[in-house]
Amino acid sequence: MGTSTTLNQKADVVLIGAGIMSATLGVMLKALQPDLTIEIFERLDEIAAESSDAMNNAGTGHSAFCELNYTPQLNDGTVDISKAVKIAEQFEVSKEFWSFLVEKGFVQSPKDFINSVPHMSFVWGDENVSYLKKRYEALSKHHMFKEMLYSEDKTVLQQWIPLVMEGRDAGEKVSATKMDLGTDVNFGALSNHLFDYLKKQPGVNMHMAHDVIDIKRRGDEWAVSVKSLKTRERTRVKAKFVFIGAGGGALHLLQQSGIPESKGFGGFPVSGQWLVCHDPEVIKKHDAKVYGKASVGSPPMSVPHLDTRMINGKRALLFGPYAGFSTRFLKKGSLLDLFTSIKLNNIIPLLSAGKDNIPLTRYLIGQVMQSPEDRLKALRDYYPNAKAEDWKLEIAGQRVQVIKADPKRGGVLEFGTEVVTAADGSIAALLGASPGASTSVSIMVHLIERCFKAKMKTDDWQAKLKEMIPSYGQSLAKDAALANATRERTTKVLELA
Image 1 (cartoon, helix red, strand yellow):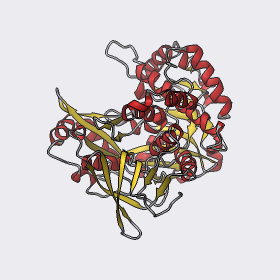
Image 2 (cartoon, one colour; image 1 turned 30 degrees about the horizontal axis):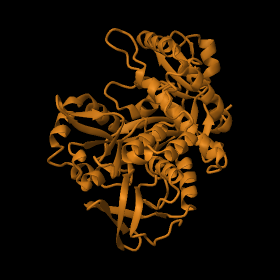
Image 3 (cartoon, one colour; image 1 turned 90 degrees about the vertical axis):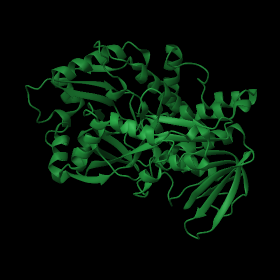
Image 4 (cartoon, helix red, strand yellow; image 1 turned 90 degrees about the horizontal axis):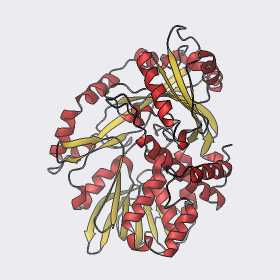
C-alpha cells in the first residue's frame, strides 16, 4: 500500500495520472468492488501538480452560473441555455458524490476543498447588457437557476462588487448577475484527500515519479511499461483495465495503445498565466467569481475573471487567465509534445482545424506578445483602480484542446472533454479541458457505464452507485423537487450554508 515501489505484476486496474479524474474513478471503483487491485502511476513527485492544482486550474467550481461561453446567443437573438443546464446538473452530481465522501469520513472537513463564493457575470456596453439581460431571463425560468439575481443599478452593483465598481466611468452602462449558490473548489486539495484514502486501502499501490512509457495489448490484457524516474528501473504491469487520466499527457499514451478509436485525435495546447494579488486589503474587499465576455477567437479557458479563491486555507484573488501558446502538452512536459503527437491518421484533422481557427491563432499570438501594461489594462476593465505593484504574474497550467476527425470539415477543434474508450471497454482515456474537473463525477460515472457494462447491470453495483449519488438514474435538470431536495442536502453536508 501507500507509495510503495514494489509493483504488482498483475492488477485489475491501472490508473495513469494522479489528478482529480483518476482519484474520482479509483474511489468509485473501490467502493463498487472492494477486492479490486489498483496500481496508480504519476510521473511527478506530487499529487495533482498539473491540471488539478489550484493555481493551474483555470476555473474552479464550474456550475454554469457565471460562464457566458456556456450560453451562446443565437442568430435569432435568443440565448441557448441547454449547455448551461447540463453543466449545472453535472456539478450538482459532483456535490452529491463529495457529500458521500464527507458522510463516510473519506474527507474529514469539506472546507478543505469547497467553500461558498458567489458566482457573478459582469458586462458593459449596450450590446452586452442586452445579452446579459436575455441570458438572465432565459436561465431564471429554469429551476436550476431560479435564485439568480440581475441588476443594472450601480448602487446595488457597488454593494455586490465594490472593487469592480470603484473608479468606473459614471456614464458607462453596466449590468451583472449574481448566484449566491456559487462555490470555489480546490481540486488539488480534493485529489490529495482521495488519494490519501485510496493509499490506505488493501490492494492499492501508488507510485510517484513513475513514467508510463508504453501501453500495448497482450491478449485480453494490457501491458503497461513503467520507468521509475528515480532509480531508472523499468517494470511491466499487466492489467484488465487501464484509465489514462494524464491531462495533457493522455493523447500520447492513447496513441501508443493503438486502439482504432484513437485514430484521428489530435491536440492543440493552450498555456495560461495569472495576475495574483498580494495586497491583503484588496483581497479582503472582493468576494466573488466575476466572469466577463471572452474576446473573439479566445478559448473557453481564457474567459477573463476576477476570482476569489481559497488556497491552502487562505483567501486569494486572481485575475486572468491570460492565454498563450506553447508546444508543451504539460506544464512540465517537452517542447516536442505537439510535434510527436502528429500522426498520419490525424494530420488532416489537425490541418483542417487549424485552417478553421485562424482567429484563435491570431488571438493567442496577441496574448503571447502582451506587455505588463497590456495585462494591467485588461485587469482594469474589471478593477479600474488596480495598481501594478499589488499584482504578480504567475504561470498557470497547460490545457490541450481536443482536435478530432469530422466527416464534413475534415477536423474540428473541441472545447470540452472527450472520453475515448476501446470497443471492449478495457481501456479509456480522458482528453480535453473545461469544464473538466467540475464535472469529473458525471464523466467517471459514464466511463464506468461504458467500460464495466456487465457489472453495472448488477443490483449490487446499482445500489452502491445510488448510495454514492442518490439521484443516479434520475434527472435533476427535469425534476425540480428532486433538484431542490438534493441541493438542500448537499449544502448542509458540505457546510455551504
